[in-house]
Image (tube, rainbow, N blue to C red):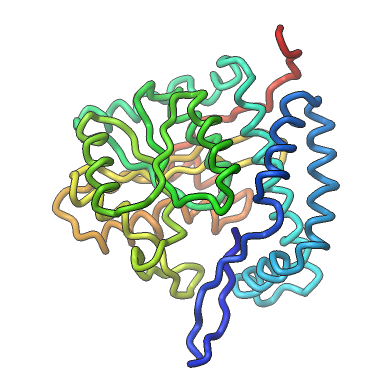
Length: 320
């Protein structure tokens, strides 16, 4: 799904979501079974070629990406904006491949990122209110959920809106369940909030992406110097339950490693939802999103809490 700002008849800007051609049951299913059986290099090669085709054939999605990048980087040339759009396609494809492959790798693949960092989460859980992990569509959020599950050993529910394709939604639900991760689709907001409150009361984890709102579930924040609507549900649930919010991202590095990142904890006590959402969105996961590669590494060492590097897994034969 790609969001693009278009002008309505009254001249006001209106956000429009473009579903794109990659997020359907046929392509996702073929990707799942292909990645499950093919060697890593072959999966990546097919992803490289198929995203080039999608970049040229799915014109609505490509134009929306270029338009989004133009608003963020107005000084860039059209050629550079299109290059970034193609990289976005490939980033999504490679993150999906990595998520699928993570289902069959041994736990020791995760050890470099797990070792020595459980203490930070345990300090959060010592409060007895659980924690709301917030992030955006940046980095490999699905892989981040797996790491959180293994890092904490606690129940985790991933909250999101239903997939446009029920087949894709079912694939993702089954893949998460492999690690004991529950998928919660946003439906009745009050019912969903009460359900999540019960999970947090049992000192569990709720994970939510905040950069995509649903209907009136929105609040305006400053994003790249422009007003944007983020979801206010995480802040409302934090205010209702008293659970703290912890920004996090799983960021791919140039060498193929992943770096897990924690931001600063935001207390859910005695705070207004608007204050919570502003703090978590502008001071939370956006710093690694806004900074370049070198700045991200320096910022992680000085200001935030890097979980560590996680290498890509070595090839493992099925059944071995």
